[in-house]
Image 1: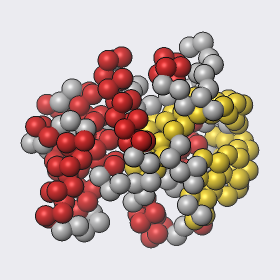
Image 2: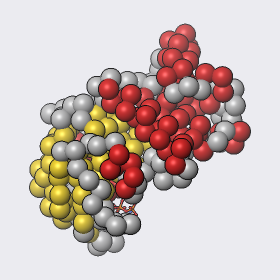
Image 3: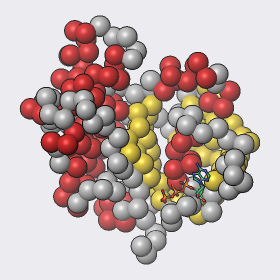
Image 4: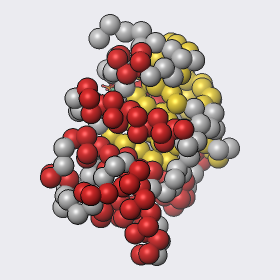
Length: 228
Ligand SMILES: Nc1ncnc2c1ncn2[C@@H]1O[C@H](COP(=O)(O)OP(=O)(O)OP(=O)(O)O)[C@@H](O)[C@H]1O
């Protein structure tokens, strides 16, 4: 469960990112965040995994107030949240296997359990045969699947996807969406910021629309609602 209570966020340079947001997202929901560029979508998601701290307001993730976490508590808190980005953000010199294993090595798992988890998650995203490749040897869609595998290898309760199909062609985008739907079907909450009208209007989910740092629409099985 994610609960935001009256959240305001002003960046250090004075730009207002969020201007009074309250929202509840239940475990297992799939939520699209839509809105024009600069509306506050990324800011909204960054607050959930403590990439940013609000200027005012309370954010509860599974009853824990994220705004009150000490720096040393942040890595442990983030184990329950996977994040994927438009530009994949894989480590270019590491293989697919190593990119995913890295996420487990930093939390001191034993090598045998790491191998099992990495191969299982690669199987889940259909990339078992590419474990030894480096990111440059993969298509954009494959790189995004690796990024998703890395994000879910710890079985997080929440997956945040910030424009995960933004760099992909339509066919590849649908493949990524089907992977996200499968992950959601296993109980993971998915929060996805997107500019894709076609995806939002085809795979119907809750839609939160933002403008100028506030929520202007929040609908169950909503529409994209913008002409972009
Ligand atoms: N690190 C930052 N420092 C200062 N201002 C920022 C920072 N990040 C975002 N902003 C500003 O905050 C506002 C909201 O930005 P945000 O990135 O959340 O929008 P967005 O809806 O995700 O946009 P896009 O669709 O282009 O990704 C914008 O005015 C933006 O310029």
